[in-house]
Length: 102
Image (cartoon, rainbow, N blue to C red):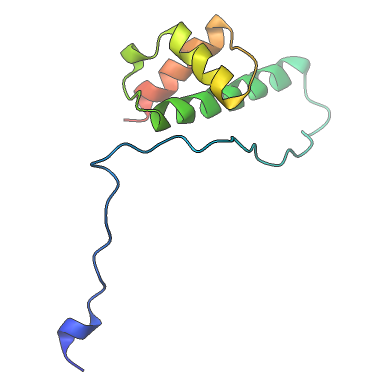
């Protein structure tokens, strides 16, 4: 068999065109959190999960830089994916996730 026949076919990249946000948003199946932790741990854990979901939604909608993600932008993304409006602390966390993912 010739070597050219063994080469894998190149795939098309989506990096050059915008990726649309898939709607409707379907959350991942929830599992119970481990018992016996302090209440602050649960609050922080849920805040991080929410910030991660919002950062992903913003990246999918074309907001790539933390400077573009103002509180109003983050809150409108939260409304779009169907989660409660985030606090200022969660908005700050979203921008931090976007900043450090580069």
